[in-house]
Length: 263
Ligand SMILES: [Zn+2]
Image (cartoon, rainbow, N blue to C red; front, side, top):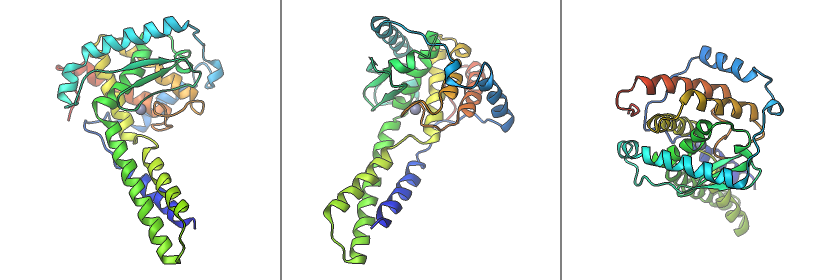
């Protein structure tokens, strides 16, 4: 009785991949990615070579709150342009060693494990800006729709398989629905991740952060690849690709007279 869930998994993944971007994403070439790969390899490609920055919980909390306030104050023009339903953000520090940052659409969590690898406030601003970008572009809502569709598809396929085989098992049906939902909820699409980075670049520029310095975040993430979890790092876009994309975004933001991305 494995066919239903497997087909559900496939269908829901396809749907999750359909969530596109509202704005034009930076175009990157293979040469751009190759150059970025060299940056990742510089100073040793492994995470062990990265310096750690140990700060007190008070320092971390104050830093998160300071950066969140500065980004939020700079956000209204971008929020209005992107037709975001709201432009206030609940950003909290989480004293946990998980190397992560995430949002459920209403609450952005920045984990100690990630902050330890970051040096400047510009880098941390790129993390918070990325999560704010997901909220501004309403990616979580799109993800939830995918989860619901995944759950329905899981149920339909499982029921179909049960009818076909004359097999009745409520638990298997529930499992199938749950699997469909969790696959749909699994991750943002590659386009959504890239769009969150793009919106983050515009947000940081509006808040007068240093985009070049902030770009070190993506080198750190590339080196940490495999050690990280969830929304900030869902393996795609691949490390070097993301660095190249950020560099293109910097050039785009600097050339933009109104500091707004192209629709
Ligand atoms: Zn993300």
